[in-house]
Length: 182
Image (cartoon, rainbow, N blue to C red; front, side, top):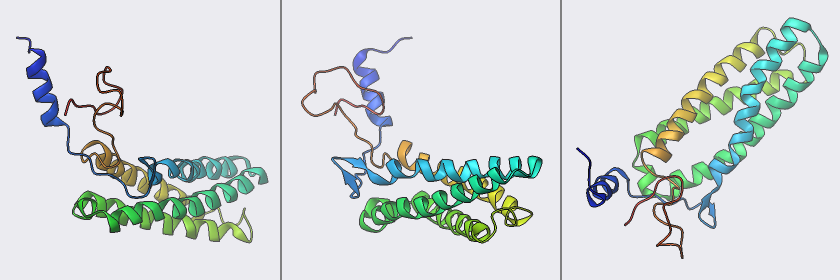
């Protein structure tokens, strides 16, 4: 049995959570999700460079890994400052267990990523086996968990999500992402 447009709208408005706005944002766009992608990609890419060095012993992969570890660690800490600011300053985020879990996992991930970078600073090749590779794999697993929790914050709790039509376009068709007629 098909639903009428009004029934669909009523059902959709129940499913869309009330948005929680980020305080660390530029024109409504939260900074933490904007800045975290490059450092996370660097930390994930570190696994590939470590494995490539292990298989080839080419110093290029050790140097690339050193740079990826540094970009991942320093960039991750920089991006995490904006997430921490939102966690501390926005009461509705502080109330979420998912927010605290995401933060704790991220601190563990960045601490291990920083240790991995420090191990490589003096001799990029000597820092890879065995501890560099182990740390890279552990950090990649923590990236997965932190990313999953960050996704839950966005998609289940609507943190930093604009709900509704863009301003000045109330009569326009709904845009991609969460939308509601409220």
